[in-house]
Image 1 (cartoon, helix red, strand yellow):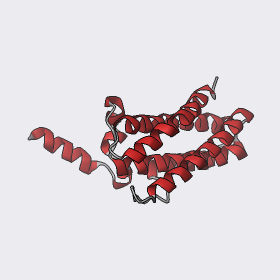
Image 2 (cartoon, helix red, strand yellow; image 1 turned 90 degrees about the vertical axis):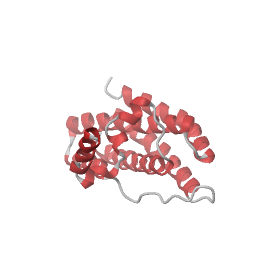
Image 3 (cartoon, rainbow, N blue to C red; image 1 turned 60 degrees about the vertical axis):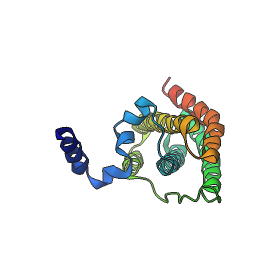
Image 4 (cartoon, rainbow, N blue to C red; image 1 turned 45 degrees about the vertical axis):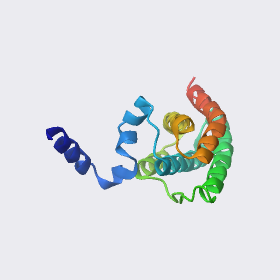
Length: 176
């Protein structure tokens, strides 16, 4: 009983803006344990991650060094295709999930910070953010592809995984 009260106190103390993501995803518990996200959470989180990668990529095309600009061009193309495929699936008769139209508060803050930076500071922050975002998207895709409950969405995740794993490898190499 005491443990439940402690958990409820922590959950209620978290600001509403931070609750854009399920607690298990925010805390890192779900990825660490390999827990499959609920279908609606999965769709929302990968859609938001995709939006962020596209918008951050557009900033990088204007502000980044040559290596990050080249990476951003690939990421934008990959995530625009990924987003279009997700939108088609989300509106299909078998899924019917509305995609978010805006970033969550965490990604809004990251994008805002990128907008304020320039030069080496921009490059370092962009590279760091891309690595984190790609790790999250790939983790979500892996977990849903192997454990999700919607067959079409599982297939979508499995098909998207190799291309986005490649982007993750490239994100790791940005600062080398």
